[in-house]
Length: 337
Image (cartoon, rainbow, N blue to C red; front, side, top):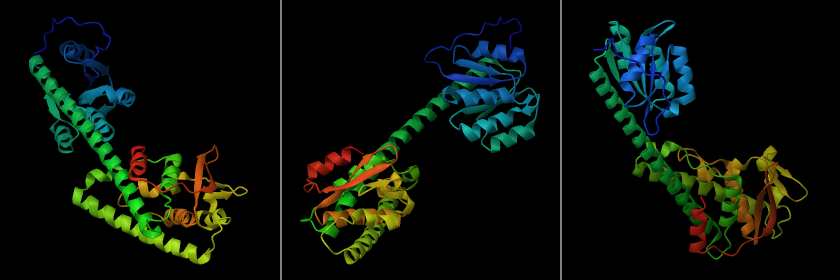
């Protein structure tokens, strides 16, 4: 039980290397006893109301491992604060404590997953320390698990982009023929200039077989759309001249593209990166399939579109196509994404 003669320390500076616990209670003595009892285990932040607790959470949630809140306080119940933390900062382990037998609120909080433990006052200090040791260990394990998931996601994202670049090369070779110049470098250069964000985390929600299947169908649908767009371009613009290349893009890109005296200005770079960065369940737009078809149309004539970044957008001009890609060159491109 709490020792009434326990002398209370002054507020101390945060100790390096220790986790942080936020304790919220309107009773000053309870805050002091908690600080004194828990100081060897963690840095302790305190608040005297639910609203103050919310402000501290919003400002310092990243460093807080455990939230302990009294239940009955003026203005709001503690389970409201725990629910607030549960919604916004699920990594924080949440504990409810009270001197009252308010089972209705407590059971509701437990059932909704808002709290990890319920500790009744008056505290047994040894038991309180043990509970908080366990809570801090759970917070540490959660943090490690979250870090592993982030690392797994990053690997999946890099694999996703690499596989899509391989699909892009195969798609272009199938449409242009391996002896033709391929617009893969032009496409990848434009994507890098525009900026590619790796696919969204829906990759973690699918098992490997479903993922491969979804990517295969997505790539096939994209290839079919590009082939259709390319056939239309060849039918409408069969000559070898490329002077009309930028004007050719205008009707499809609409307001997202301007022709500035023979130079293209793309106002929305995302239209040039879709195949590489959109989620596997998202179909590629007709604008993007037309973009690749246009690059193929140019490549068949020995030309390409080179992009550079400006304050207004991405500026593109028609230039001579690069020599054919080698496996080493393609691998080097993949490394850049």
